[in-house]
Length: 268
Image (spheres, rainbow, N blue to C red):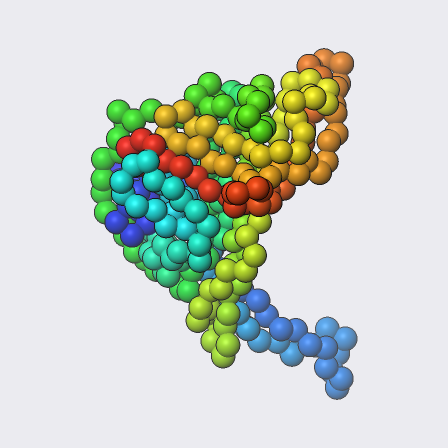
């Protein structure tokens, strides 16, 4: 009973979920000359999508999210034109599904107490496929990252957090022209947003500044300037007081809005 997930010739050691879907759009126009329920309709667009989740033991997948990277460590991944992944496929027993000519639309990573570090991404493709992911052996000698392995810094100050999450949005825009399937997929403006939860009211160490998260020995993600936009403190009487900040990333002095530096063995 094999269960495999691959993108091109690569795979995550600990992929945990894969959803493949077709989002169909129809035009529907009311017409005179019929009953109130009568409408003209037709299929206009189909968008193949795939969402996958995995436990993190590497950050190299960021090269498929925001840019490209070399194979010599340490290497830097910086923002560039959105790279194309290619074919993504998932096989469970004898069933296979996937998408072709895929690009990453959103990627999110979450560090939260009580759970391993997890990532989830959504990709848009130009068609679906029954691509069968060939078998492989997951590297169970590689450890999944845990929150205790991670350090969050606001400026140069480490901050004690119970949650750090970051979402990268490439703003993909499928272009259909006269086809019902995308003929190309264009990346619009890049957005970097996230949340930060600290176990105290309005922690004074959390102020607009650069932001970084060190993921153990794997690498570090840097945000040039984080603007904390929403700051709602919360307490119930049964739980510890805490404040959860919403932030948006912008370019900072001498640094782009987003980059990552990898400094260990390259894993996805």
